[in-house]
Length: 564
Image 1 (cartoon, rainbow, N blue to C red):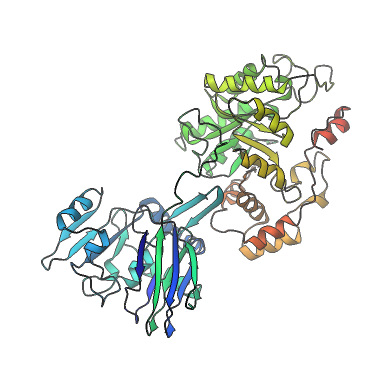
Image 2 (tube, rainbow, N blue to C red; image 1 turned 30 degrees about the horizontal axis):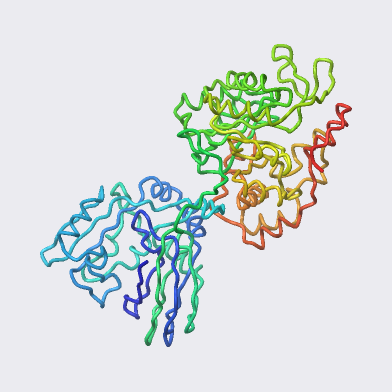
């Protein structure tokens, strides 16, 4: 914990910054306490760092691409003694928390890429190592954030690092030592100033700030002012859910930081689509035996890998065990068939597709078997799903899959698996969209340490041609969704996908259009307020489109309910 207080001269504004953003591991939280408010001015101004990121990225994409790639280097000359006439006059002893020059040099020498020079007047010129300047804040304390932030001190340095030792225009450069364009920096600074929110202090006021998501500054003031700040890192101790599945390999479940997932159900050209999806940035891919396109999907994946777009280790590939292969002796055969079709040595995740056990259909006589046997009948058979899970666990032990999970299971069926599992399910995949919010099931799965991936996150569209939904069910034209899209200058699809992300789920989307693929991933430069989330949630109708209890009887003459 470090305490600071009002070191800059009162007549000078402290520019916007994330506290200690020029170091590699800045504090996560800042707590402010007002002991004495100023006579005039002195407000603490705040701005949403994601808002700044979006402005800069939209207006100056080349600048931002370079900032993402190389980061920033900061150049600053520090005095030997604190200079209270300067907003950046803290001595190098205080800045680096050392007592001797020898101790300081040991600390500086330990930082790879950092350069420093002792000047003739005893001051110290430091050129920092390249520091990440654009950060993706993913999860905090089991909450999904997934927001890009303009997380740096670039504007603070450009605007405020000026005194008798420092020239603010020389205070920053890209991590590759290229200069930054002053016009671009001025535009970003102007945007920040025009969009700030200023908090006027009263004695005894206290508030907390997420330093990863919000930048702060201090307006100039008159009179005495004492506002103290305590800086904290992340919460002490592990935030890992004790129920989370054990990592059975060097490939962790979270190796792909992006929750967006591309699905392969009902695609016209799966080979080209798989290739384009990877080229568009997707690294989570959701396949299944039942989709009938794993050979083509595998060819698209191999093409992307061969062209160097990604490596196999950068992908998180899921496939699923079909209903006709639930007998323990058939589980490894089904796994081998999917691996052969996909052209892979292993998958990252293997899910039981439905909690429905059906009559075995030989691989060489009909594949994929779909919902009917060779006599075109849907035949449900007795099966101990616990033994199916045991066979799934054996696939982890053999290295054929890194993780195993469930799809379309309700709470009680999940409990049944958990009661005997040696390897806990990694993921639950379910239908979920604004017409089917699934609050209790999502909460239950998360509390049991499972990730939740959601198919059909935009609702009814894929089911209309199957007569499982009507045009009246489509959400793209819903007044609430359209208004939120207008408010955030995003598409209706992006609103629904962002809603899914903020609910701590991983949405599975699909499209044959590369433009739409990229659009469906552009979810991290905005966020929905709690009011926005509640508005989308108000559309809940408990309307399920993919329900075997409905379509199996209509299509195959077999009543097969799995949801109450």
